[in-house]
Picture 1 (tube, rainbow, N blue to C red):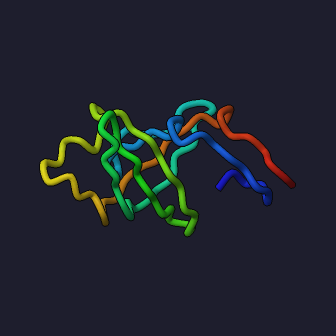
Picture 2: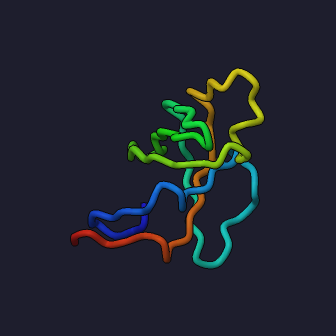
Length: 96
């Protein structure tokens, strides 16, 4: 995903989600990857969103209740295609 064979971490709240195809090109220092929502868990003040990237990586994002996935009335986002965005600077190298 980052072009380096190593283990990385990123805090779930640093991941931003938008519907697939939204947002244009990645900005300087920004990473964008395609993913599918595998589960959404309502937490009261937000949602925990489990994702599977196009490369098969599992991610977890935390979104405030006013964020992008709230627009869907039924709350079931499983199978939705999204774009995951984050700043490269937010990624922490765990091991190489």
